[in-house]
Length: 157
Image (cartoon, rainbow, N blue to C red; front, side):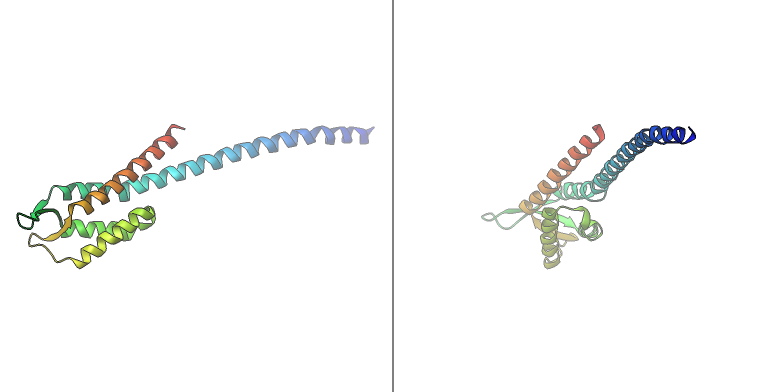
């Protein structure tokens, strides 16, 4: 009789243990998923605050420094980027390159190489082709908006 009672207790406790284990497995999965989402949100916020927002600000400031170059026949507009702005762009590139897209890395590398090859303008900076700056600005703006959209979608979920 005592053996039968122990056997009944053992068989009835197995489903309870399975149910408890399943419950904790589901809860653990939810916690892991939330943690991954939270880390991805932090990553996107870091990309925006350390790379894209400062670059947008610097490029917008630079667009206000348009200088005509050349004679009447071949008049071109160039943008004067101050040495401080150039150093800040270079610093962002060096410190946060891992947060940038490959397209932006390639464009900034080209930009920095041009910066290193140009002579300083008498106003304390370097003159860049306005189309190059606009192209860089378009890349940064587009990626900023894409990251912002991804971030908004994650926050809404």
